[in-house]
Image (tube, rainbow, N blue to C red):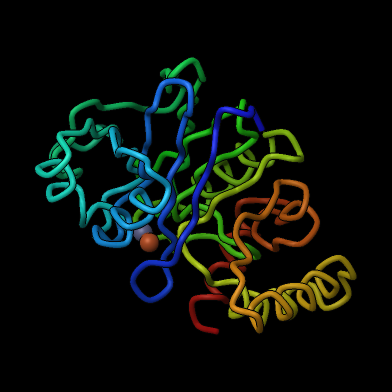
Length: 243
Ligand code: ZN
Ligand code: FE
């Protein structure tokens, strides 16, 4: 990671993660989604960071619920998907896949990852070797297909798999142990998966987040990322929905 970029992760609501990225040089701090205003403000205050931006991944209330209150109190700039008008409260700057913007001197790449919603985007910060993936991919899982198709999610998994192996993936929920129970039914003989589950259990026993994961880890263990075809992904997703 660039020595100027710092990332903070902290639990919000029942199983969300709040996320902040801070650039020491410019003083900018962005909240990735806004699950819980008080937790986001406390995380900034603890570190002496001033919140200047929000980057939304998609419109669901556990991701945008704090937008308006934070904007009113801190006068910040909200960036998010604008493919469907009016979905992101307080949106200032609409972006879509392929867009690039600057965070201090650092590049942020917007990647289109439909599936969970039709307009879901993720934010990749190469200098931090980090991607903020919202509800597209979880440790050992993927987002529910509320709006998109298996084809959409298959393409989104491929886009994430195409990032460098050591990219840290900051997922928006701690779903790992419940995802693990399902993942072993898909690949009972995947030793990397079995080994990782032991690690995850140890972490969760100590109350430690399993997020971030990495691209390499998900390629080795995540049944949705490992699905060979969109149809296969669709079948696995349907099985998970009724698991
Ligand atoms: Zn969601
Ligand atoms: Fe969510």
